[in-house]
Image (tube, rainbow, N blue to C red; front, top):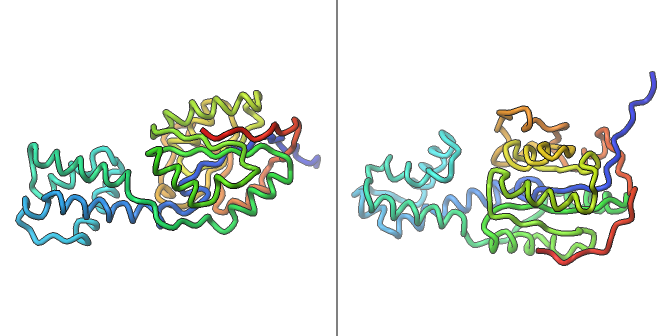
Length: 256
């Protein structure tokens, strides 16, 4: 039987959260707890008349989020579940929403095989990019605390404040300036409805890392189905790709 031809890849784009580090354990749970604390301080406890604690509000937030994974409505639903309505509920909900997305960034650690994978890809001669969505200040701090801004072999970090892939597709189009053939661009991420779909809309190759907050999220559209699924980044090298420096890697640009 003839050996299957391996797909040439000259450029790899990594999502940040729950792809290069465990965002769920290191950030998401911390942010939910931080938002719970801020909501209590904003009057949630006094307004409901209940004996609420940070822990009880935290558990309720997680339960409501699992019921419906919509952060835009989560804090309003939480207030409604506790019997709050009207302008007071809207004010406290805004406090929770803002606190969740601006939770201070503490110490962060990359997944064990993130750096070895990046180094190996660099030795293969491929271009490396990082793509991340969220509050700009928070995402920049994450990148800095993870040490990714100091890696000489990361070509550029792309930031977007839009979620659900709307901003990511714009950033991925910028990658095509370096590699015009989308079939030679590989995007690695964890969310089928975000970077996976954005990449597939542009005709890029995709690998989904199963892990973190959205590990159980199922694709809802054919474009949300990745070419491959892995659990560890080092498994990239056992897939049907040939990491090939077909074009010289240009000098590293300043990050935006």
